[in-house]
Image 1 (cartoon, rainbow, N blue to C red):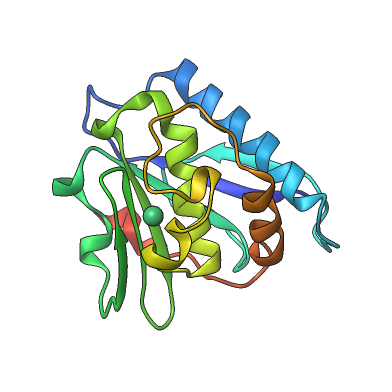
Image 2 (tube, rainbow, N blue to C red):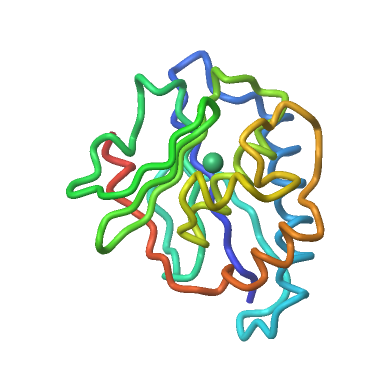
Length: 176
Ligand SMILES: [Zn+2]
């Protein structure tokens, strides 16, 4: 049984992420999350499966979902009720309320670093670290992601400590 990471392309018709790029992003994230799972005593197996979905997936409370939206104007997260934490940067946004967590990445920020942008939001998503706390780290924890990097050793250690924590994802995001 793998650990599931779901990716949802909510880009505007005609501006969605090309199939080859979707594959590349899934491949990056599968390899990074599998490395991280292998640092844990994961009861759910130590392999990540990364799947692009068009509709709400069957997802466990410890698994992860990342929305890709066109830009801040098309934010899914802006519709989350009772949201109390938002960690926005130019490349994406992760927020949560008392029950659910949601991450989105902005396609218009640039498609060259979608894997890095998604991993950064995944770090906010699973750790619930705010910008100040997360961005003081190195590698993909930093705010500026305009480089083709992979997660640093520190990034992987941090995520290995949080990846299995229950952070139920906000599936109502698929309504927007
Ligand atoms: Zn951030």
